[in-house]
Length: 337
Ligand code: FAD
Image (tube, rainbow, N blue to C red):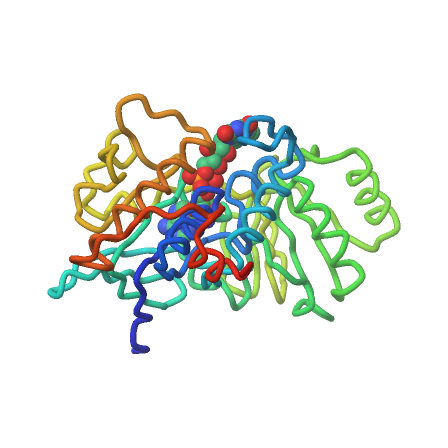
């Protein structure tokens, strides 16, 4: 096995609060790695409301979910946090030396002095097709929300789904793949009218096939679907691309021994530390008396959690409070000296 990445801090989640956590740790000279299940930073702000305006970020009268994520990335850049996208943190365990060992779905592991769970409402992961035994084909002939379609060049591809992303994926594939079939459970779509029209035009021109049905079996080479009139059809394919939406899963965090209360991690309000020493929880994932799921509250929590970590990362050292306005040391760290 590859040896674990050793770090002062590991942040689970690159939503707004995880990003600001990295910034606050940076000011305190604590370096970190950040893991997120999504392919990019921003959490709910990008995944759920990228283009919508936000009006309650202090000092920022209006921004959008995506722009807020960009600003946070820009702010934290001087500290060079190391991002690991497209991976879910799956396990967390205490080592004999007191450090925390975490492993990811991509087979990476981290040995961290401190852990910051900024996991929001859970990891944003693609909804899976509910067919027994289908998981074994993931990455070989089954792909959920693929980042790039290049690999499907010249292939026979079946796309499963009925939203904008599913339709856009099927449409884009008609220019790349040999043959494209869209499969959706009904002849109606949760998508923009223009996208639906474009898809129907391609079907009418025989550039794409459309089949109503639900997947019922898959062997890596053939997808079996059942149509509304209970007929079964076998669709031979090279690749099955599923775009069934992305939804948050609390998933593994429930197994980390943190005594969840209604799917939230209880913390104190001095350091936002969980019942496990060195494991902090910030943002939407935590709970305490008076908790409000707001970005500004997560920013405050992240600030105090970073201070809480200094006792573990720099034992016995008194860390003074410094202002970014006037501290030459902070200017050096921020690269503005
Ligand atoms: P999230 O944004 O949920 O990010 C958590 C990240 O952690 C995700 O990217 C997820 O993939 C990742 N993750 C979770 N588990 C794992 C794991 N095991 N491994 C790897 N990665 C993992 N708040 C405001 O203050 N003002 C507003 O105007 C506002 N408007 C909103 C509008 C909408 C429609 C919604 C849905 C929310 C709104 N909110 C608003 C709430 C705000 O978006 C959340 O409070 C904020 O996103 C919480 O940030 P977070 O970093 O704690 O979590």
